[in-house]
Length: 361
Ligand SMILES: NC(=O)c1ccc[n+]([C@@H]2O[C@H](COP(=O)([O-])OP(=O)(O)OC[C@H]3O[C@@H](n4cnc5c(N)ncnc54)[C@H](O)[C@@H]3O)[C@@H](O)[C@H]2O)c1
Ligand SMILES: [Zn+2]
Ligand SMILES: [Zn+2]
Image (cartoon, rainbow, N blue to C red; front, top):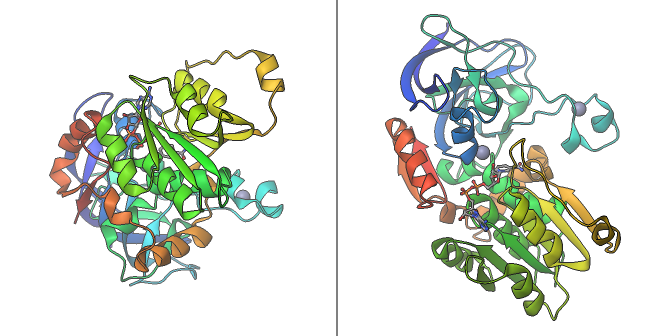
């Protein structure tokens, strides 16, 4: 039987979100209904509400979530009712060229539930990143559910579903930070600070956090940054060079998504260093660089979607490290809030007051 639950809906561009009753169908073949326990508020949810992703309103927001599988549809074998899962936004197909070449993190054909959740009047909803977890229950493709240790706190676990995974993965998977490396992270919000944590996990010897907000820099220090640079008052390229014996950092992670910070990352790297762009730019942004400077350096310029993660490989591993006290996911949970408070959480995020507000059910 289809279920009626409460969910956070963005009806139109820039309009405050509202709680509305939504209908969640029973899971069809390859689908699962998940009882959401926790869902973090991410910058991308705000991007959806601002019309910055696409115009497919109304959106059911929320996508950094953990919960318990309530029911599964025909043919689902990877998860079963009662499993504690983290939701992911890239259920890989296993059949496209990238998947067949053994690089499923580049899958061309990731999928979501085929059926639609709807408003009470039957209007079809677009779930944020194919998840829609600011709701008591949500319908997803079974491949979007990754089973992890049920002893983990849902608030902390859910964050691996997006921003924290994007940051840790930018350092570990895309940047391939190694023991002894120097790493600079530009922009220390939830994603950048997760990159700081990832760099530390990977054994980086020097981790330079760059931000325009001292609060964020203090948090970065708490999470393992060895040096901090406020780029409002100090030239970050000069500062990173100075801190790395004049060379620049082995890996520079850009977690803002702006041309000027990308340029800083480009020039703050070592001659053979790697730049990782994890911040998401808007369509009108452009960069202009002397081609000779691009040619004149080795290393690599990379971008990182979702931290090049494989949920089935990375979520259980990171949850194990969390349970062993080696990865402080709780540090990213600034506050827990109720479903009604998502609009207020957007405000707080905008003012830079939080790494993550997490809705608890
Ligand atoms: N690639 C991915 O898969 C992926 C996944 C999730 C989020 N993101 C993107 O990552 C970016 C960061 O997300 P977040 O949740 O951490 O956002 P956030 O708003 O929490 O953090 C942004 C940080 O950048 C800092 N900042 C802003 N302008 C700056 C500047 N000029 N120089 C230095 N620092 C500056 C802010 O003070 C803040 O600390 C966003 O663009 C988001 O869309 C990417
Ligand atoms: Zn594929
Ligand atoms: Zn997100």
